[in-house]
Amino acid sequence: MASPSSPSIYDGWTREELIARLTDIDHERARPKQRPPSPKFRHNKVFQFSRHSRRKIALKFSYAGWEYGGLAFQQMRATLPTVEGVLFDALVKARLIDPEQGFEGCGWERCGRTDRGVSGAGQVVSLWVRSTQVGGEDVTHGKNDVSVSNVVASPGDSVSSTISTSQDSVLPGLEFGFDEDDLETAPINSSLPAPTKDRKVIYEHDYLAILNRLLPATIRILAWSPVSDNFSARFSCSYRHYKYFFSTDTAPGPTLDIKRMRVAASKLIGEHDFRNMCKLDPAKQITVFKRRVVSAEIDPVSVDGNGNGQYVFNLVGSAFLYHQVRHIMSVLFMVGHGQEDPSVVTNLMNVEEGLESGATEVVDCKPEYQMADALPLMLWDCGYPEGELDWRTTNGAPLRNGGEVRSDLYQQLHAIHSRSQVYTALNDHFLLAASRFHLPQNNATDGTPSTSSSSSASKLLIPLGGGTYKRTSQDKYVSLLRRNRLDHVEVTNERWRVGKGLRRDGQF
Image (cartoon, rainbow, N blue to C red; front, side):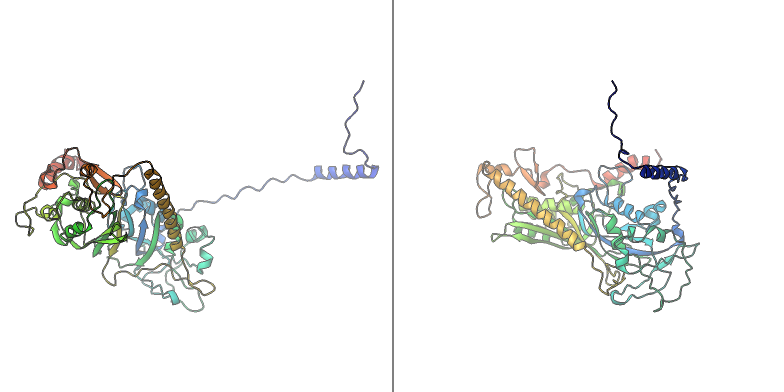
């Protein structure tokens, strides 16, 4: 027995409706098939840096050191990226420098090298970057006044003068502050007349906006400045200012004696030999260790009525040796903790008989001791002679409504700061919760060291800053000047010369 057929969609259609449907089907079959449009192929044009003008500028920037393996670029692959490596990649991506020429090709110079974990709030680098401006032309841009100088054309080709329009048309939708077509447009002739009211003003690239869009939040460009051709971020610098943050509460153990630390710090001022308060790098073959300290002060940051809380060690000098600041801070911790007398600073700088007034002995070889932690250290500022720099935050282009360009950089950093305060509050409560079940090794209520047995045990814990400590292996603390000494500088340098030095030069 046959099963009943399923209902059709055409059940109930009239004869005329069926004929109209068949006619539509015939028309669809007769219509030629259309192929989907083929994707447009765009040739990747090679960007010709030699066809664009360059100018020398200085960049002032900040970075969170704990995120990086140091400031300086490293040839060998490292676990963490370097600040210079990330900044260089951003400049390359923005097509402001030629990656084929490397650091030397753009004349890269840094003010001060910071090591892994050390931060910077006012680091400066100088380099040659691509510019919109034509060689030797001075242009002023009204209210924001960006004068164009020290601009040169690359030899062998015409000079580019890419024209950017008003600022609010640049920021929202364009990649790198200018679109790809703008990058690939052939440069126009460099013999341009002076700007007039009838033609658009040529504004410089907005270096801050371009780079900060490409960089991570842990690196921020704060300002840029045009500089002369012979300006050097390193050699033109007149002083470096470092800050080291620490707390008087070095629990377990007694609180730090700020007065003793200040006495010791005052002995650093002036020109001294700091070979015993730095790390010797024999590869550099340094023989002169005299450096001038302009200022060495310990200032409160956030303290209570008893003087306990957060302090900062402000150290200003013309130049510094490798790890010098961290070694100085380690000695100050030993003084503040009561393990050393402030006079130890004078003795450490007395590398020859009669070199330091008030010294009780000659210390021509460095005693063994560990330098302070890197986290609390910051390169705060780099100073330059008056008139060398003219820091700017925009390229001078006005908004269409006539207002000034305002960066949201401060708001970005303020948001990071607000989040860090939340972490601080959380850690405070973790400590509070633990204190309900675990007794801390308390100090005396007046801030003086406790006389309990736990206090004598704390003598074996040497504070190193940032909540870190060094426990000595001896049952009794050994005075810094009575410890084992490292080899003399001349011996260390000579050993490197006849060893690694010869192998590096291919002579052995």
